[in-house]
Amino acid sequence: MGDLVERGGLNVELALLTHGILTAHGHEADPAMVLLARQVAAAIPAGERVPHNFVAYAVLLDRLGYGTGSWLVAPAPVDAAGLRPMEILSASRERIRRMCSQIASATAWGAVPCARTYPRLSDLLLAVSMQSLSAYDLEFGATVLRTVTYLGAGDPTRMGVIAQFLADQQCEDGSIGFFGIEAAKIAQRGEALCPAHQLSLPTTVGVLWALKEVLRPGSNVFRDFSTPVA
Image (cartoon, rainbow, N blue to C red):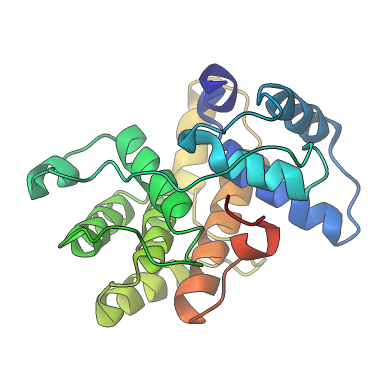
């Protein structure tokens, strides 16, 4: 399962959410996304408790019509207990993503309070978000910012500043992110690239998702796709 959902650096959770939103608004389903959804669904055993790392996929797939409805979803512990501040600030992107996924699972995407409190974790994650945005990693920074809303303890002023920075990255065509330099570098290396699909689309969806939940208290995109937590 891990090899499938992490292959090629694709954010499968974000891709599935995008697929669901587009099809819900009448857009034709992309065959590649349909195939991916079916492959991920097939990798989750029916009737078994879903590993917490893959809860988001199970919930999304079930609501998108690819699940069996028999997956058991339960809150999971957050991989932050005992970590020193510098360990979080210097953690790899993969570990931070895993932590964000666990927080989403443990809080049912903000629908219920976290079972445990993690002092200073919100402040540390906001610092991680700002670090990511300083490197212009907009989608990752937005994901971390959105996770802070699930903990319910983020500094409103700092979150507002980050949200405004993200909003300021919107282009005239509505997409998020100015990737001209990155696209040029990739083209110089002779690599195939579709900027709209590989750069702008995942960034735009991820940032708009975060902005909706940060700027509109009580708003929760994932809750629309969620199922009751067992």
